[in-house]
Length: 340
Image (cartoon, rainbow, N blue to C red; front, side, top):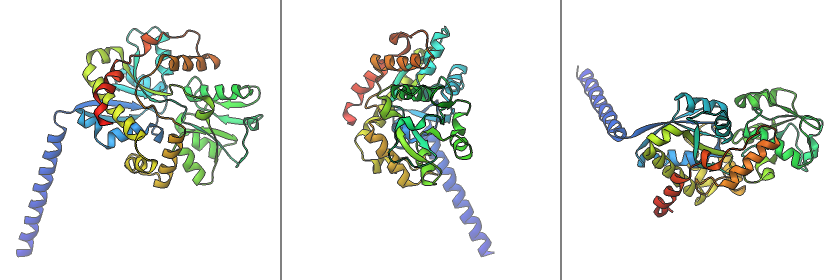
């Protein structure tokens, strides 16, 4: 009897503790504004965002982020335009396409996260002295046609006097999320992959990282945050707070070591070994892949549109002041100065 009574008391205490924890969690989250963020893919390439999430920068701004992954810029844009997401993180080309379709409530870019292509050319065989001419007569799985990854790959190939469709075949039929599997299980000699996938494939001995697409292409506004024009107009305070948190994440990554970045990212990438996270963070830092502030400059958008024209995907350029607002990024730099 005494034993049964003791068990009931312990069970009651546990129930009380659990109830208190739920209450505290509710109190903590009470007052936070939910923001639905749809990211193009889950990659260490977006480290400043995950740092902002893991270190509570969004919560300190009064925001609770509900994160989903779209697996493709077109899918992210669809989620934003349909109201399934408030903010999208993807290549700005998606916003350019929508603007040129004549949509009144088009997407507007308000913060830039990365400034280079974050993908790497991975081959089936080790090529320690890799040269771009090695891909001639071969097949590269390059992603969706019209997407920034595929267009940047074409841009790099043409810079090296290699004509897509003539000198090399670019397979654009494979969905973004399936590219690694199609490469390891198929006949294509090469594929472009983001991190940590590229390093994981290499560690498993199923491929070898041969070249950085971003280092070859130069700086380009590769990934940015956008929302519908109407959402920004109605939720200026939310957009400002969101941008503040992202800028704080950018500053933190800039001022910390790859090891420290990897430590913070562990929860965001539980299936990735810490040594790979360190390697990837160091690689992106060395390549200067991350923006140091959220401002998208006019010349950067101009380069992106040049890449799109080179790929035959853009007939009409979009005016910078119609597609981009720097108001929130500029304000964030003023507000967050003391965090440096």
